[in-house]
Length: 79
Picture 1 (cartoon, rainbow, N blue to C red):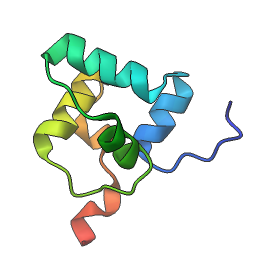
Picture 2 (picture 1 turned 90 degrees about the vertical axis):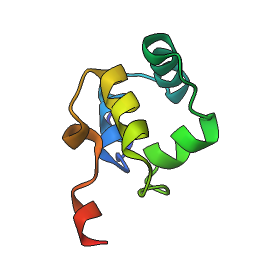
Picture 3 (picture 1 turned 135 degrees about the vertical axis):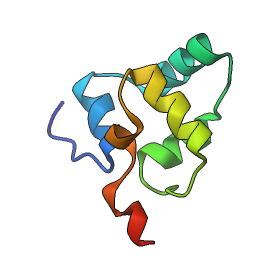
């Protein structure tokens, strides 16, 4: 449903792939054995949490088979 305005690059990817945050968490766990809390994923997807660890970004990027640049917001360098 493209009528939803993506809040972040990561959100846009999830919308594009029609993937839920829960599916993303499951793939992260399947690929890495690591669990990211659903509240944490939600805050990252919605742009409420921007200064999170590189490890977390890498887990998310690997789960989606994209680069970290594809999910990290461009304006992070300005904070």
